[in-house]
Amino acid sequence: MSPFTQQFRRSALITAAASLAVAIGLPTMMRAQQPVASPSPPPPPYLAAFPNFAPALTANMPGDVDIDLKKQLEAQGAFPKVQREFDLNAW
Image (cartoon, rainbow, N blue to C red; front, side, top):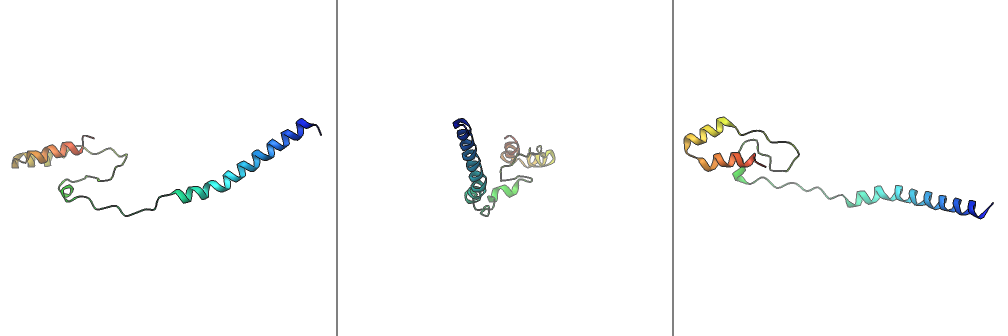
């Protein structure tokens, strides 16, 4: 067997061994690095006044401003609450 063939086989064996070690060790390392799920804190009380508000960040697009609620709040003169409706959907 030529020295080139021996070196090629040795390199292939080392690569295969390293690949196997990674394949075996990676799932173990992934399990060890997963964060422990903790219960999420309850949303602040002031968010209860705003329907359809999700306190957790998601990729979902929010709905539009509730026009009926907007009209009710304007009739009551609760303009800061009207602005908050728009703020919740302005992200």
